Structures are given as structure tokens and as C-alpha cells.
Image (cartoon, helix red, strand yellow):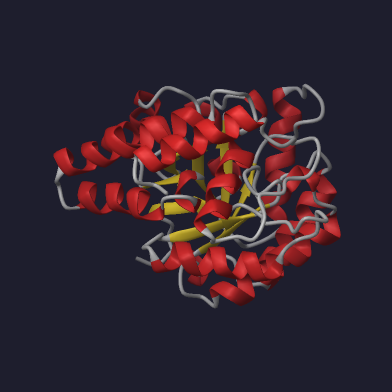
Length: 301
């Protein structure tokens, strides 16, 4: 199904892509290409580059723009492409959104500005300024920077900027997806939490935006395929048997999940190094051993 202005509609497994770095902390272009081939080959429905999972908060604006270009060149239009353009400076988000539009992106993803506790009117002005600067559909982030967006607010944003067409829902309340569908029907919700992904789909999410598909794309794509086929037991087996325990062991320490995912991908041989940039730090040896051991138990490794 096509979206407006030639942009492809987002649905299914929209992957929050990791950004591989080499041991010197530079973007590893070869590993990035390998990771993209790995996930697209395994059935991921779309790529979301440059988001929080992609360590956007550690990249300079030039690096973020370069990363977007590299991803677009590697994907070559095979799946819909979304770029995270979050920045506390609205002008920078606009600059990145325009670059995404030039690259032919199908969507841009924007969380509330995260550096200050902004008033709701200021956050709305941030969203609307970016939306009005481009023709690309915009995905706003419910739960980004710990800021929840009400259904009424999302509907109001869409009424003021028609290209605000998606909402990534990362709050632990799958029932809110149903409320969003009913109260802001033009804005399509995507489930943003691995642990509640299937519940989000059952409440009406059109797809998901989660990061675990970097590591086990077959499981994430498989949940979507099973759900779309009406096979809830098969979707539930993947969700509860593989995704929940695997993700659970990676999120027990705050903000360590990115390093955990990279350690597993390096152990799989998909990327060359598990390097993350500060302020993300390496896992201690016990934690790393536990993560990799659990992945072997779950046949992820």
C-alpha cells in the first residue's frame, strides 16, 4: 500500500538499526553493510536508521548525515526507509529531515527535544516546525525522552500538520494503541517495546519499531508473519519463547542493551566489533558471559 506523495506506508517489522563502530570508535562501513544485508535477508520489513538504538546521541551532525547516506545507498530502495532526526535543536532536526527527504526517505522519526524539560507548547512547536519544513511523513515518539503524548495531542498535531502520520508508542501500555487508533485514526501507531510487541499488534498497531531484530531478525519478522496470518499461537511462541527472555537479559541494566546487542552480533560474526561510544561503556565479564550464554540456550547464538 502506498502512502501519500510516493512515500511507502510503514507496516510490519520496522527495525531500529544499530550503528557499528570499529575499535577506534569510527563508523564501520563494512559492518554496517553486512548488518543491513543480514536483517533485510531475514525478512525485516523496513529500516529505521539513526535513532537512539543507533547511538545518534554520540554522533556529530555531519556523522549522522553521512550515516543516513550510507544506509540509503546500501538499502537501495528494497524496503521502506525511516531516519531518526532527533536533536534538542529544532534547526538541526530540520537540517537532518531535509537530508532524509533528499535521500528519498519514506518517513522521519522525531522524539521530543530531550535536553530540557520543555513545556508542551514548545514540544508541539518543535514537531510542527520539522513537519512543515519537509514533505516526508513524520513519526512522533510517544515515550521518547520519557515524555508521554496524549491521544488528543497526537490528533491535534496531525490536524495542524497532515504529514504527522505515525506514532511510535514506547510506553508500557499496549491498550493505549487501541485508544490511539480510535481517537487519532489518521495517525498510525507502531509498537515500540519488544516485551509487549504482540499485545500492541493485537490492539491495532500497524507494525513495530524495535531493536531486537538486529540480533534475531527471524524472530521479529516471524512474529509479524504469524500475526498477519492469524496464527496467534505461533506468534506467541516466538514472543514468549525467544524474544521476551532474550531481550529481558539485555535490559536488566539501564542503557546497556545496545552494548549487549552488539556483543551478540559480534559473536555471530555479523559485525566486526561490539564497540560503543561513551557514555555507553563495555559490559563487565560476568555480564557479557551471562548474555552470551543465555543466547546460546535460546538458540540465538
